[in-house]
Amino acid sequence: MSYPFQIKTYEEYQRAYKRSVDDPEGFWADVASSFSWRKRWNKVLDWNFKEPHVEWFSGSKLNITENCLDRHLLNLGNKPAIIWEPNDPEEHHRVLTYRNLYDKVCQFSHVLKNNGVKKGDRVCIYMGMIPELAIAVLACARIGAIHSVIFGGFSAQSIADRLQDAKAEYIVTCDGAFRGAKDIPLKNVIDDALIACPFVKRVIVCTRTRTPVSMIKGRDVWWEDEIKKVETLGLNHFEAEEMDAEDELFILYTSGSTGKPKGVVHTCGGYMVFTAYSFVNVFQYTPGDVHFCTADIGWITGHSYILYGPLASGATTLMFEGVPTWPDAGRLWQIVDKYKVNVLYTAPTAIRSLMGFGLEPFEGTDLSSLKVLGTVGEPINEEAWHWYDEHVGKKRCPIVDTWWQTETGGILISNMAGVTPAKPAHATLPLPGVQPILVDENGVEVTGNPAAGNLCIKAPWPSIIRTTYGDHERCRQTYFSTYENLYFTGDGALRDADGNYRITGRVDDVLNVSGHRIGTAEVENAINMHAGVVESAVVGYPHDIKGQGIYAYVICQDMHTDESHMRLDILQTVSRIIGPIAKPDKIQFVSGLPKTRSGKIMRRILRKIAEGEKNNLGDTTTLLDPSVVEEIAEGKL
Ligand code: WTA
Image (cartoon, rainbow, N blue to C red; front, top):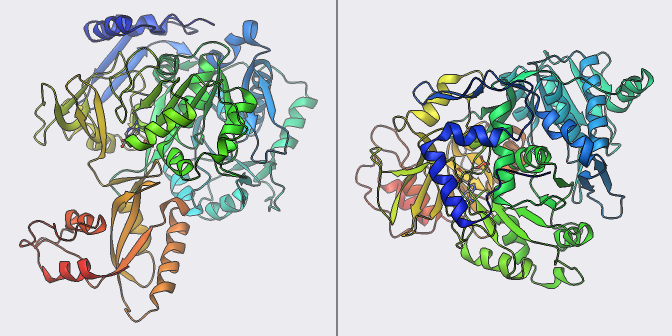
């Protein structure tokens, strides 16, 4: 496969960038021409950020799975599409060629159809990292159903909230999932979620762990049985549904500054074009390379750079079921060696956690196949960057620091491996087609370099968020109303003298814990559900490995309760309501919270205390009761 839109030199980058600004429609029409469309577009782009309304490749028809599968069969049919490494290194790995994957996706498309799923229906997918997860996602896309993958670490309550929001009537899950030493009972969690979701018509359960499950008559069916039925009928090919470029492809829930996660909606045409374009350019993918992204498909990184971007590019993508530290901290290096991985894409939190194990885990592994390293999800500190460069890349591999978001669908700001220069801890330059700007609090553009401000994007790129599911006004409010005619990212950034961006982190009430987005309001709501809690306030604080940790200040009704028990009960409550990923790292019991006279919690002060800057709290005179601050600052954990 060749990639006519692959940019190979710095000069080409500059030229492409200029053209993408001067003639965006011409630029993207050229990129889109390398894909397979059933019908071409009438207009490349139609947009305004007021409503917002963004339409790419209007009037065109396609199916993204024909681009990810069918069109590769002729030349790449016998090439590995997915290499799957199981959690347990003793278990056999699996390789699915493009032909195998195509066959399996077609089969499962029949299964979905036989179970009543139609174009436009929402299908919730709650599975571990096994090939069947990829198959389920692609089968949804093939029949035109909208998939909504939920990460295996979310609780029954979180799943129920999402099922209700998306009005999803179909679920694909597993009996359980293996992750490191753990065995997560996925189907049981789904059963708990479904108590609140009687509208769910069908649950398809794939076997993985053989954990006992209760299969409810008339609602639950086994994946394997359903496949057998399709095989018995001799059903092979499944004719892909013809989709409009702007038909919805998937919903992915993500946290914001309010209590309720929102369903970010991406559509078929633009998402396909941008994920493949960014994949090939940022990682400088060369046919035959093995691409290993360590994310989970439950997050956007897995959607875009394990599945759609690589598969639309005919790449070989490695899917890993387990975690980097099990059975030992050399697991990633063993996998790189075993499959001669060429591109490794992971999160700074994983790098920082592996740094703690020293160099011993590298012993006996050969990392010479590596050509490109990538990071994503949070700012990478210089120490971690240099460790990654020295010990993993052996100073021979460019590191791409890729900045993007669930809402952006794909990488917007990053160096391109070996093409544009890297700079430690900097995402560096925007991809051609992306126009970032920095603005001050009043929305006035900060020009010149160096500069600092809030990061916005001036014009749409093909995989920009289209709406938040079921609530377009929320999409407008959250991203397009803070600054007129700009997409607001929620991140703050610096720009150096050469125009390189350095993302400094969220400027809203969103935390980034181990690369996972968690809203402070969401955690507060969960803590407040506990019967003994009166009120709480949650802030982030710097954490050596996680990047940010969660710090909760909690007022309890009965302050005579045994604090250590109360703490455990609160953690259990948060696990129940959101999931273990949102459990606070620190809980401090307090008798009051610093509030302004109008009743607003002064988080600035709470953040300072959590950061350990107790002597530098700034002006506290506007507080209703300044003595509360002293008590909190003196309080011990
Ligand atoms: C942060 C993950 C610094 C940022 C793809 C953003 C980063 C949020 C980087 C989105 C990076 C992501 N450098 N910060 N390279 N990449 N972020 O939606 O705060 O899970 O807004 O998407 O992660 O997180 P999300």
